[in-house]
Length: 145
Image 1 (spheres, helix red, strand yellow):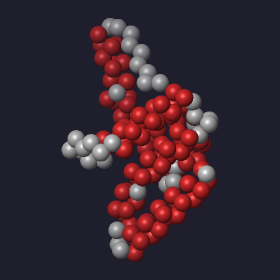
Image 2 (cartoon, helix red, strand yellow):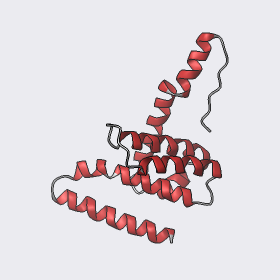
Image 3 (cartoon, rainbow, N blue to C red):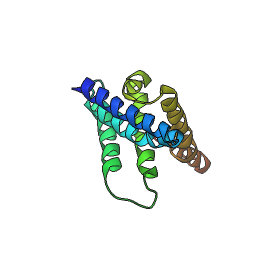
Image 4 (cartoon, rainbow, N blue to C red):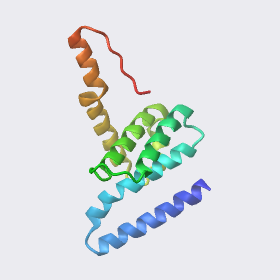
């Protein structure tokens, strides 16, 4: 079943990108293709037996947030951000090979997403909380795992 889903997804995605190229919107289409790629990857990882229950819970929350029809004015940007945070954390748990197995796009794009999310987390997430704790003279250990 998983192989059928993967083949079908790739077939539809490739046809859509090919059509967009013929219409002169190839670059824009590749950017727009990122959202379904993320949702597909979340879904497939949730179904994977190698992924821990804890990681599946994170992925499930991200997939639910992604799928909810609520809009806060940011459009899909916040959905993509939440999903990428979950994927970045899960990559640390399951390894990049398992994640790349389900990523329909280029593996290099996924690695760039991971590096971006790690950098952002260090600057504005857990890293910022640790730095604040050091300035206040208290030891703060932050983990979202």
